[in-house]
Length: 308
Ligand code: GLU
Image (cartoon, rainbow, N blue to C red; front, side, top):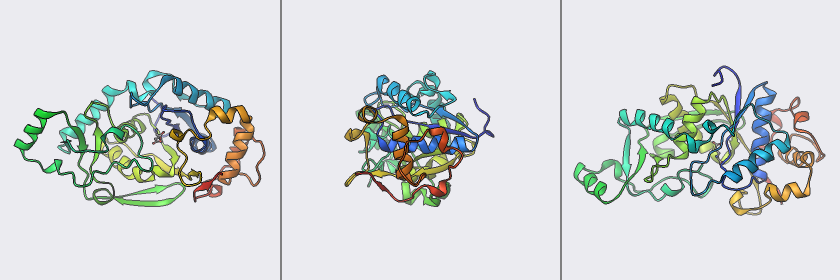
């Protein structure tokens, strides 16, 4: 494992499809952020959900990053950096929280199916009206007889402030702003929020750069990492690229790397991303390494970026 004192950024894609422009922009900014600080990069495959993840997508994502010149020092394809292979590690941290008495079974979650993925828009994991934390012992026993529950963590009435490297201070009261959230699905699959927090802590990640839609997840992750006895990383969120009315999602299949790689060179694609995000004043081909010396978050746009 890398020393915590060293700067270490990460790519953490979910191999449930090909990358699209939004993923590429987050990847570019994550790489520039770490490299401009003289830091290392890690590639972790967030393939928790067996129904959505595919080995060929993982390989395609790694290949796209190599094609763009966004290299990494540790990680994929070593199995220890694939979340699907880390269940025993997540078990350990899940049991640690359970021993603290802050985990409870939940039978009513509508968000459970999605919990193994990061909560992108429309996938928030809040269960309005859930009273599973307050069930009596006999109600619980009866429900256990019927079916297996998901497992949630009870959050305190505590406000966490994350000093985002791009958007500034972001405060969230965990009880009001996020609420109890799922750590494990009923089928045993661990949730994104647990896995990402355990991994960022244990893998020595010091810089987390990803799309702004996950800024809302940062306070609870910083809280979990603190409970695990680690220092949270610095978070810096990237602006979103938006199509006409929606954030680009690889599930929409828009402009994925399969199409992009047929139509442009890596330098052209990087030039487009660098220009759209504000890093260079006009769109022209550029190599990833050429962007490192001049990189600064102050140049990166904050508002959503339309790309149509
Ligand atoms: N695996 C997540 C995704 O692809 C990203 C999670 C993160 O960067 O924290 O949406």
